[in-house]
Length: 396
Image (cartoon, rainbow, N blue to C red; front, side, top):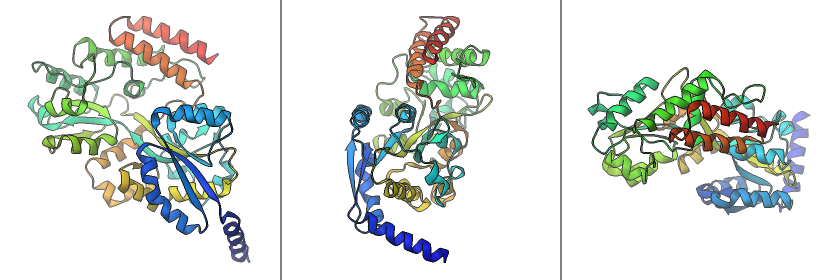
C-alpha cells in the first residue's frame, strides 16, 4: 500500500513539474560547465527545463543584493561559503530543515563538518554543500632537498627553518604570504588553539595563543623570508624558485601543470604545518533555494541530484572540484591521486570562518590590522588592542 501511495505521489509530482523552468544562478567556470551535468537531470525529469544564468564572481555579490532587494532571485543559487551569513541574515534563503528530514540522499553526516557548518545560520540549515576546497602547502621538492628537507616541513618550527634557509639564497625568498589575507593567516590562529571570536561571541584575539600566531606570521616579514610586496606572478615565481613555497587551494594544481610544465616532477603538496593542530581554511560553494522560489520542490530535487555521489564524482572529473560528499573520497580515482589525496586528508581538519552576519566587517578589521603589524607599523600589543576595540564595536 505504501509503495502504491509513493508511486501515486511521484506521478502527481511529475505531472506538476511538467513544463516548469528551473532557474539557476551560478558563477565562473561552474556556470559554463553545469550544462554538461544538467542534461541528465532534465532527462530524469521530462518536461523540465533548466535555465542557467552565469554571473562573474566579480559582481555576483552586487547582483545578489539587487535580487534580494527586488525579490527577483532565481529558484537555485550557487553561494560562496563566506557569503552565506550575510544573505541568510537578510532572509533570502529557504530553511531546508524539513526537506533534509525527509531526504534519503542528503543528511549532515554525509558531508565534512567544516563544510556543513557554512550552511547553518542561527541553528537553521539554509544551504547544501556543493563542492569544497581547502588550503595546503605547495612546495618545490628539489629546492627543499637542497636545504636538507627531503619531505615537506611538518610543523611550525620546520616551516620557519626551511623557509629561512631558502631565503638565504641570493635574491630569493623562502615562501610567500600576502600582508592582508585572512584566509592565509587564520589557519595559523586555529592551529595554535586560538580564535578571532570566542564561544560567547566576544573578541578572542586577546589571548597568548592568538598573539603567538600573530608574531609567528609577522616574523616571516620581519626577517625578509617572504617578499613584502607578495608574488607578482606566482606561476613564474614558483617555477624560478623565487618563492618555493606557498599555501593555496586545489584549483592551482592543474593551473601549475598547465602554465609551468617545466617543473613537473619538482613540486608537491603537503598538509598544513602542525602546531597543536594542522587546521586549514574550509571554503567552496553551497547550493541554496531562494525563499521567493515558486518551484521549491523541484529545486530541492535538483539539490539532491547534485548531492548524489555519482554526480559529485562526475563534477570532480569535469572541473577537479573537490567533492563535498565524503563517500566520494573512497573512490580509487581520488585516493590514488598524489595531489587530490592530500586535500582529502586536509579536509578532515579544516574549518570555516564564523557564520555570523558581522563576519565581513570583522574580517576587514583583522586584515587591516594584520597588514600594519606585519609591515612593522604597530606592535603586537597595539594590534591586539586595536582589533579588540574594533571587533567589540561590531559585535555590540
